[in-house]
Length: 484
Image 1 (cartoon, one colour):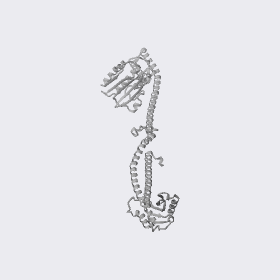
Image 2: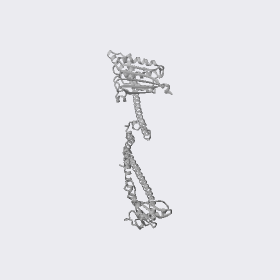
Image 3: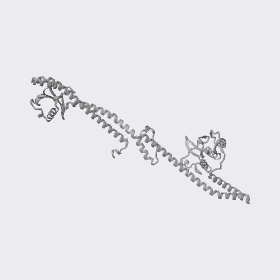
Image 4: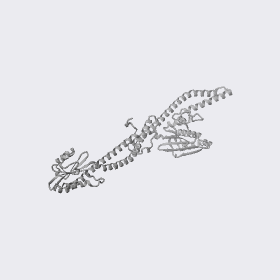
């Protein structure tokens, strides 16, 4: 796997760590270069000051040709007890105007009378630089090679030149101070790394976590196994935060679309079942009506003994029951009736109260209506009676049934609750179908009829289970609002 293909949970910390290490090394390197440059300048300044002092002290002995005294003067600085950080020259030379050695602090290595440019190539380069730069016109001149730093100072007094003083410093004198500085800089850099690297790994993983979680959920989005991310995963509103917000909206829309799709499928299935039931009912009604008419004629005009008459009555009752059941399936638009009155709800309460008392139920009636409503009274009454009778039937003995009725924003809202047994997912799926399995007695058409009436009135009916209660909610828009 390539580095760039790694997960962000590793990529962020790794790249951050590399950046921190490279930045620390770059800063430390720049710091060390600056320290070296400062040490070099200090050495040149100190050496130039020493050279000017020696030139002043040796000028008269050189005029007097007192070479021994000159040797003592230039050797004195080198005889100082070594002190840390004291950057002394390793050799001091005095040249005459012919560039020959007059005095040297190392006479065994550089004898008197030696031409300086014959010693090493570096000295030759130094002499060429001195000659080309007219050292006699300035106080000091510095040059360096791979191993040494050279300081040249003209021996002048009132325009009279006796030669040149050269101080040779080994670059090794810079090493102790440079080493101590490097150790200090390395410790500081290490301390910075020990602080920043854990912070970087923690920050990197924190930054990568919402992206990793988002990636995992996006992969599952195709299968429909989706869930929202907690806002505490990344509570900020930058690009990552906006990406998470967009994902949340996608999940919400996906859930809404799924719920809407299920609702459409359920509605289409109910409509198809309704059309089928209505078609079958129409087909049954025609021969059924003929049979009931024939039986009625036979009863009125036929001569039958007691047994035959009893049998005919039994057949008539059976056919009548079939006719009533079939009639329940034919839920069509009702004839317009009067508007709904508050008294209608009081009538319904009085109608269902005996059934509630038979089970010793508490019927909690909550109605705030005080005016007529532009809704079909007969249809609304049938819906509410069906739901209340179902609730009373489903409630526990000595249980509770709640009926809450209110109007708001041109909508009538009715909520019927009971504390009966909870419905299974299978029962909820087929709840509003004819001959629903929720009905243990009767033909199970009450909720089917209720659903059809609510649909005809342009309303909605929903069921939910909260705190061990089954709650039916019906919302019906006023006819004026529906027309608008």
